[in-house]
Length: 393
Image (cartoon, rainbow, N blue to C red; front, side):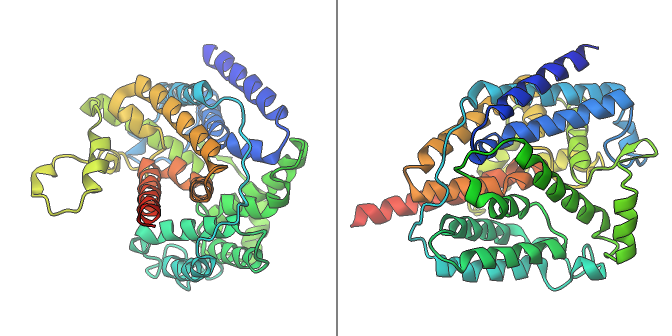
């Protein structure tokens, strides 16, 4: 009963906050709250209907029960509360600051990185997940793709060739079966002329719903190959709850990673910053002797729980410091998000950093802090390089 009451308060708060937004960019600013609210809603739904957020197997069955669903819901609620503390009044941002950051090179890199990551196998032929799809292709190439896309978006009003290139690249990624890197890129393309214009919440709901439905449909069909009959079957009978399981592509499995992380924390104890320390250590060139081998990242803790891959952004905060860690992490992330928005209006490079964070948001929010960390490292290096160049002049 208390959970339903807490969720109702969050629902009223979010509706009031979103309803008062004047510009589309205000909704982008609230992206962390929107995703946090969505995950909290998943937890609320699973808890009330007593269903699993992911297909069960012998391993997952050990971790999913009414208590674990309740704990994951409360933790998600705490994360959103942490965001609300520091993510205050929506900030305006001029995304389209035409910077002189090598747009021609960005076009070359965006094509090369897209091809290296996706290859030639398309979901139309059942190519997703085959031997030709190699996860090791990702690595730094995904970051280069994000960086190039962000740079091109910042120049979308300056060069007419930018928009058709981004549309082509987005379609290529979509038909290759990959979604996380292009969802927000497509949002930019659909709404880019309305970013700084007044828009009601109702005018956002329909195109957003269609976009999310298409991405969910892709998730359902990509491994088996897309046929006309499979599309018709899924559209005519979209079963989102089947045999006691919530079937929402990626989101449900990401919510399960929080459940798994909490279970592992109870079994092994909190890590008190060790997994975050691993990021710092792994960022240093590996010429240091193997004294660091005992410091493990979060993947080690969740593999045994049968997760599909990655972990929810704030799962790692729980693994290290429990719910208090989640509250602090949510507050820090909200403050970090707001500061980047404020500074993006004063620096073209920071603006590209902001756009990169937005495009990559689904990846690091649903798959883990490591993707956010790599993005921060990349732009910290670029800012430092920019500083050195200015000093040398």
